[in-house]
Image (cartoon, rainbow, N blue to C red; front, side, top):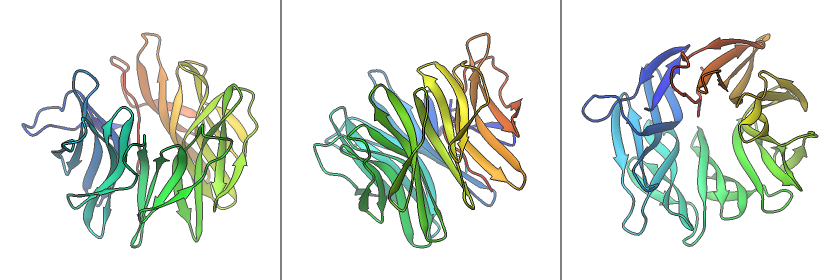
Length: 294
């Protein structure tokens, strides 16, 4: 069931009948005043998904186009007071990265590619969407793609932000036998040095300090970790731990993610200066996919 947490308090997102929306996952979240927006998908048997989003608790569905079998929504925000949603439309082997603005769809990639979107945000009238345009990782600015390929085809951009006039991005690339974290500033890549495979899912910039959030290890044998200027901090053992975000606020460092407990269920956690607090009870698996800080 799709849900969001505000300072540890859970709210289950509901379907059109007002019941908890079973078989749904929320990938992105946006907050405007007291209004909460979320976007994700509803999954059906056979691997088919329909994109769904919530505006102030009301769920709507984006049906697949006639040519494709699935829609998948990755993030949501407001642009000029109107809803803007990033996602993709398609099936295995042919997925079109696109966004929906005020109900209308706008393709970002070409037919016959395997393309996708991830995070999105607005800056004034500019719309930025992270994703993968066929084999090229990067981002779209107002529909024009910026290629951030590094180390061959197997590189990924998973986070993007703007500070002043500078554009920062973060992700990972494949180096022989492992994923290696890296970040970009205005298109210039800065790979990290790691001893084992690592994945990046969030980024924070605080002046000259670059924070990356993710995991260190492979598959479920991974630890929740963040890097500050390339120096790694582990927040868990290798208990299927992973971070979605890290943020430096004042003198404190906050991180959100999850860790698997003894019962085999993942628990959503907030770490403040390395000290964890549980946001779920561990009775069922829970995952943090997106975040919004204000």
